[in-house]
Amino acid sequence: MVGGRVAELLAERGLAQRLVVRDPARAPRLAGAEVRVAAGYGAGDEMRRALDGVDTLFLVPGREASDRVAQHTTAVDAAVAADVRRIVYLSFLGRHLGDVHPGPPALDHRGAHPRLRCRFVHLLRMSQYMDFIPSMVSPEG
Image (cartoon, rainbow, N blue to C red):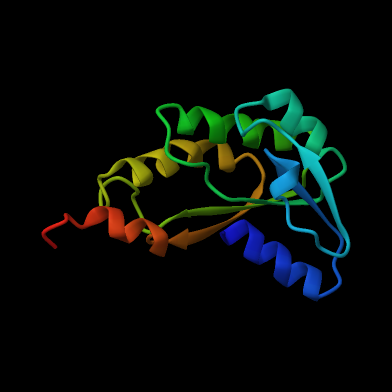
């Protein structure tokens, strides 16, 4: 949702962009948007090919998975190999991730941060996706 909304805003401004997606049928049809496919962040070679020629990457965290840190690391490494000059990474709130928010999302983001220091990186901090909040409430409220 976040990546799609950012892509819409960039398209509204007339900016050319490349959308790297898992399923091209689900990619938004936007003016000035080229679509490339990678099976996921963990598909390093596919990510590198998809990012070849890209100057700035907006990296939205992958869905929760036991290997999410490895997926994020692979995606960042692929961006570096493709000579991406700037990475904008949607991270998690908290100066010391995992200390303030000890759950898996924060720890997963903290695990990716050392890799992000290898390039010119902007970290955007979010606290929670709104669509995730209902899953935190029991049926009893």
